[in-house]
Length: 239
Image (cartoon, rainbow, N blue to C red; front, side):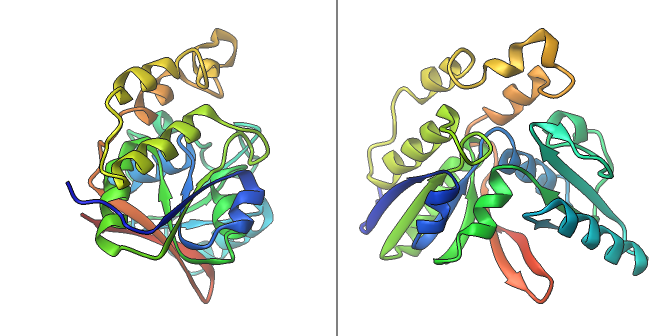
């Protein structure tokens, strides 16, 4: 098996994103970057990850004024933000017709990691649904340094799902893929993903989101974030 030969750093939360160097993977399993994989699989035109709600709404108005279709997806505290079309839920958008539409996306963890990773030489996103593709991309590129940033809960507390994703990617990079990944993912039901099984929170955290976000290695592509004149935008790179 091919392997990565450089230095691997595992970092955490928004502060970790600020410290990231080299090829940086911003990891958010529940739910931002799982959602973005599903959106690209649904043939969206592109996704603009944004830090603030205000900037996201302003971008939405910009596209509307140009007569271009866009969809605003925004979350704070897990819930859909006022003025946005949808929250950060993959099961909510799976039946939508978003083909060729631009997505404006802001969340309390994942997109904050992108905008704070100012020291990175390149930024890609990571989640369980494309973890192996992320590892294969890094092995192919062979950068000197890789930073795996686990964004956790709102970017301020550890999320076990992101830690698992980072260590799973690291295991593939080191040529010894985690043998018990299936069991570890299943364990997230009671350690890390409990909110998706809380009957009183299904309006914000549908159970189906858990299952969609834990279909590890479903997608054979990575999502790269880069800057243009309007801010950050992403594109897919197929493996």
